[in-house]
Length: 171
Image 1 (cartoon, rainbow, N blue to C red):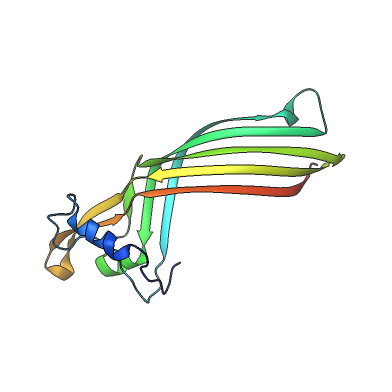
Image 2 (cartoon, rainbow, N blue to C red):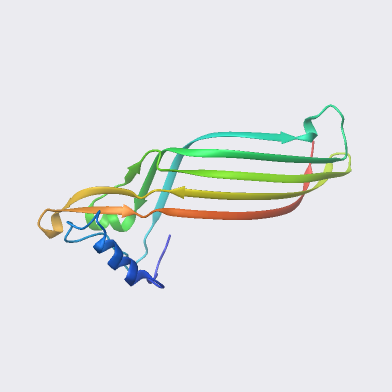
């Protein structure tokens, strides 16, 4: 849920770039970044196909107190659905759907040390990066005399790193 947000940074410049882009050049009302004092609820749901490989020494035949693991996986969005309450209220657009519009890659590694039978200290490091292409749909804007418009969610590039330290209980 987002509320009382304001466009900052390059928002005005980005609006001009969107208006002048080749893709939206013929649209007299191109998509743009809006500011609103109202609350906007936004939901992005992915159904992913995931493939990966992981190795964990805890599953080896030689049981040791110190174990480690590494892994990697790649996810492709088979179906992505975006819902935005402002688009639904203002234009009647229930969702914007896309398929295979990007990827997400994850790497993880960690160590675990069993301090006494069944209890271990763990340290894990995870890295994620993802890139998704623009999701868009065209619609007739009845509020503007039936003009064909485009609602879109822009390209998304994201990455994240997470470190965790914890206690693991093995029953």
